[in-house]
Image (cartoon, rainbow, N blue to C red):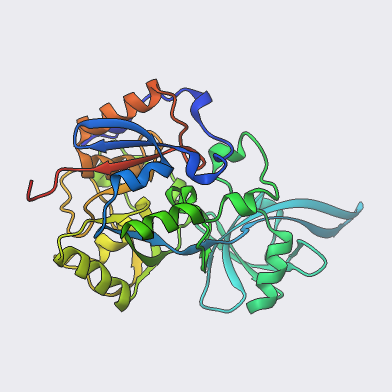
Length: 354
């Protein structure tokens, strides 16, 4: 298939720069096969039923965007350069992170960037456009200093419109966030608040938690015309023995397994590639495109995605390419809000037994 098969025109004013408040007041497009209904996220209790299981990603977004200064002596005297850093992934060597550094050309090997009175890092290497920084702190001390100095790494389409602020440290985090490591949020999950979760539990909907640390690669554009040539980025994830058993039990009982977000879907399908889900841990670069066989997910709750993105390919695989085109045309005509802070969709394809 061609990249152009997943393109659409999106009016600029439909890109959300702040989330709905309260979270569950966001709009929800419900697509059951080819039937489309307009609702709100708080209406999920009308569409889910006892015996269903939501699969939630419990990753915690770290405040990975840092602003610092590099000091250098020159013939003209002391020189200071502003350095912007976005952390990407911790390395096996404690204290070392891969990072995007702007401008990378202004930082030499062995030079130090100071982010705050507590936090600094030394440039130890560079490869493939990424830098490797060794921080002066590790463990809880590093986490504390990072929380003080760092800002949430808002997606580029939001960051281009406004800077991250203190409110984003709450808004760009799920209410159940637990395992630190993501540099982007599992955004469909941002729509859930405590009252909605309680209402779903009272309905008889079960919940399982998995972990996938969303990386900056989720925002990388697809640059090839033939999508089969695309190299998918990898992300670390884990499905525990307990979560796998819960999901398998729901499938066996005839309930629906509904991941919230493409991250949770990609992870459970990685853990279910043999036909049935089992415990799994590692780096996944699963690339879901039309023709993919879904072994675990029966439906998906997700936000509205970028044109020509791998996530558009994923939802097209689940619902069918023409159905997704119709869904997105409806969403645009009804002025749904798009992307990370935007509205949500509940995509329910016909069941295999239907």
